[in-house]
Image 1 (cartoon, rainbow, N blue to C red):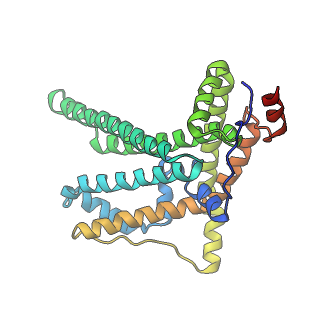
Image 2: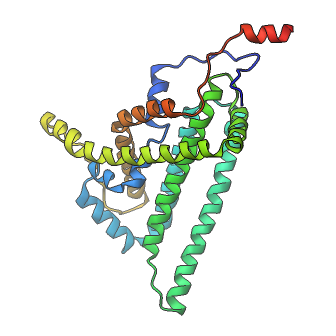
Image 3: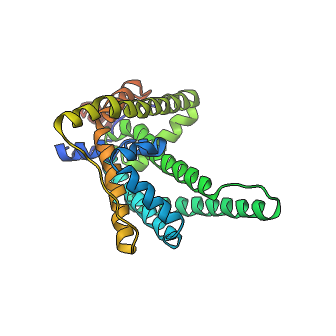
Length: 288
C-alpha cells in the first residue's frame, strides 16, 4: 500500500514543549508499568499505612469497597481519555466516538468479571471449590488496565505514519487494517516485538528505581512518600484514591526516559516509513 499524503494537507499544529511532555507522561504506553508491577506504587506510598488502609477496607469498612472500585474505575477512564487525547491528532467527532466505544467495551468487561464472581460463588457453595474473589478482582483489574493501555498505544503507533502525511485518525485506522490483511506476518511480528520491548523496559524501570532513583533521592535528602489516612468517612476514601493516583502519576513521570527510548526504537523498527510530504508531485498528477 502506497504511503501518499493527502491532496490538501492540513496545516500542522505547532507542537509545544508542554504537549510533547504530556505525550510522554500520559500518552504512549506510560502507566502500564503500574499494572505489570504493582509494587512500584510502594515507592511513592507509605507501606505500613497502605497495608492498614487495605486491611481496614477488606474487613471493617468493606461497605466502602464498591465505592472504592467505582472511584478507581472513574480515574482510570479519565486516564485513558487523556491518553487518547494527547497521543495523536483527532477530530471532535472521533474523540466522541472513542468515548462511546470505550464505555461500551468497559461495560462488556464489567459484565464478564461479574460472571466470574458469580461462577466463583457457585463453585464454592455447591462443589466446595474455593476460588478467591480477591484474586479474581486483582487479576481482572490488571488485565483490564494493561489491555486498554496497550490498545491505545499500538493503535497510535500504527496510525502515526499516515497521520504524519495528513490523514485523519479514522482514515489512518482504515489503512492500518488494509495493511494488516495484506501483510499479516509483518503486522503481528511488529506487535509481538513491541510488547516484548515494553515488558523489558518495565522490568528495567524496577531496577532503575532501586539503583538510580533511590541513591539520588537519598543523596538529596528527599523522601517522596504519600501517607494514606484512616477510612473514617467517604472524604477520607476520596483522599486516599487521590493519593494513589498521585503515586501512579509520579511513577509515570520518572518512567518518561524509558518511554522516550521505546518511542525511538518503535519508529526505527516500524515496517511503514512515512515519506516527506511533497506538494509538487500531487499538483502534477492533478494537472495530468
